[in-house]
Image (cartoon, rainbow, N blue to C red):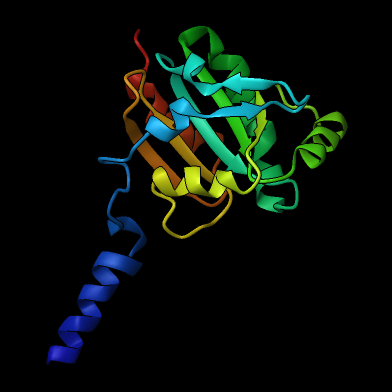
Length: 168
């Protein structure tokens, strides 16, 4: 009986996709907004300049196939919603030279940054307790986290989280 109850609890709280606890409450964005990361051209940028916007923060790597697959939809989303205070930011957990090479071969419409190994620390601060890529975080203008996504996302998933944040 105890084994069956334990099995049910593990499934219900950890394995059931519909009942996974949200990792979005209480996540710290302070490290993100104090970070200065180089863009794909090697120019350091203060990420604090994006505070006050709705941020779709996508952690990726050049070697990650699902990361590359979601980029066209993220580019579309950025183009469609940038006039509504929404920004998409791509933070690569990768070397700057690889990010630059990638961006020249595969242009995207949103800002890209290289965080190298520090990128995984940023993802961990934002709820990536699995250490997976891609990892996407939706952040309100006040800096609080709305939602996190492990693995490949699509435009519909992002829009479901964004629409309540948009002012009519």
